[in-house]
Length: 179
Ligand SMILES: [Zn+2]
Image (cartoon, rainbow, N blue to C red):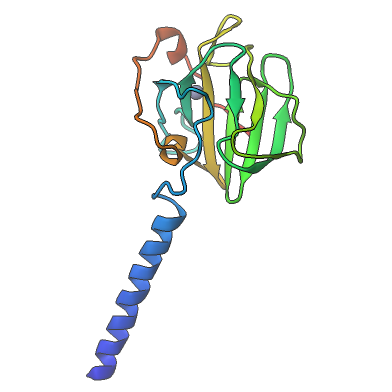
């Protein structure tokens, strides 16, 4: 009988350890990241993950921004993708297990560049992106991925989130497919 209780104790211990680990790796936003805009802005569209990968949704958050505004690395990382097409720029930074995406951004960074928390990674620059109305930017699309899974980047920053009403022009939205 004692052996049986020991085994149950081990299982309970293992389960709680795994639960603690999963909370540590994601869920508890600690340590917190820096907001990619300064000062932190309102949110014009929140995170709306699709039920399945092929369905439409909003795979990130839209931070209120304007053309020319500086975009800053929220955490140390390595640039793994830069699409420098004028007005359609995308920057992807790898932070350990996680990747963050920023668009539309014009950036002078190149793949392999190291960035540190708070570094300027580019400037909001418009073209054909759902954050643009003509050549004028209304937002910065900020995405967060772990593997192929999209996550809500706002869970990594400590701000009081203001969800703004969706502007009709921004509701016409195309999903992005960052590398
Ligand atoms: Zn967006």
